[in-house]
Image 1 (cartoon, rainbow, N blue to C red):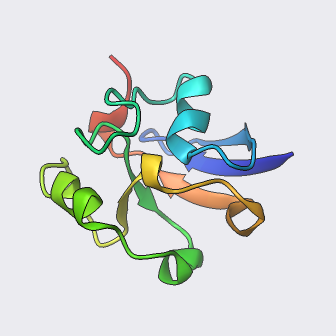
Image 2 (image 1 turned 180 degrees about the vertical axis):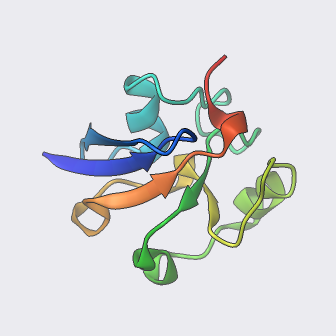
Length: 106
């Protein structure tokens, strides 16, 4: 089983099991870590995360729709991505991301 490391806003780190082929948003929703209100249709930014890993530089660039949604995300950073657009694979195993406070479930 693959995994994703999630830095929570309080500084703690959670290691979350992740199935290949799912988006990181789907994995984090399943773990009750974030909402992902639009189900990955690029209509919101509730799955916004910061990629805290050197592999950010080797990931495919965000598509235009992702860029548009990132423009409305809170706490935008150079490493901001929408987790619905990052697919879990062997290449993302152990990827570390951080949650900006607004992505936490209510």
